[in-house]
Length: 273
Image 1 (cartoon, rainbow, N blue to C red):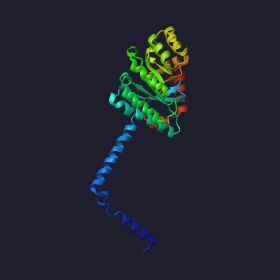
Image 2: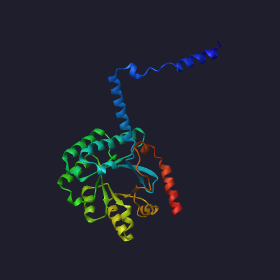
Image 3: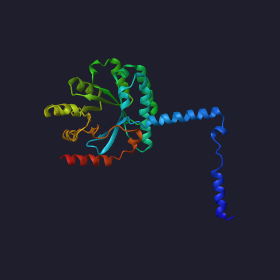
Image 4: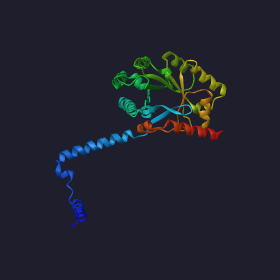
């Protein structure tokens, strides 16, 4: 028999050999446990892959700045700490990918009122050992006049930990401006949908009132090229919305190529002009 035919016979014999499955080599209990672990791993992987992070870009989009963890906006009170943990874990994941991307955790009024929730969140932030500036907490401006003493104390506790505070869904009213000034918010988020319907003089007044305090302005719900023109006109630092990029997974956040995003937006602006 030639060496070639002998090799062929060996390969065919190995191929036709009955396969010894895991069920024959391990006890049934071990197999069930292993299957359960694989199912849990798959479930966790699917959860991580969900598109729940909305990217925030520097205006008009040349650089990724941060990401908003959207599930917290409608989270039940019992889910808040678990989802905050997922958000903080994502920042570690981005750091491992050589991306220093801050995360914005939008909290509801009920979470700020619950001292047990705030205690747990403070512990999570301390144990995460993340650098100052990578964790931001946003609260909605809707109904802030009803925020009680517990809400205010919670904000002060978070600030003492180095958490950056943001006021979401701003409309530029006097009570919002007073809150931003009293609690030293780092950022305010104005809606492009609302600004479009205002006269230029009122737009300028709202934006400049925050800029005088040295607050960073974020333009949300950016949908049209004209929204980016508005951001450029009033020197709004950051923008996000459907035009910039829809929510993505945490792995996609680490893979965003800033220069390509910026180039595409500049091309769209040029075509519009």
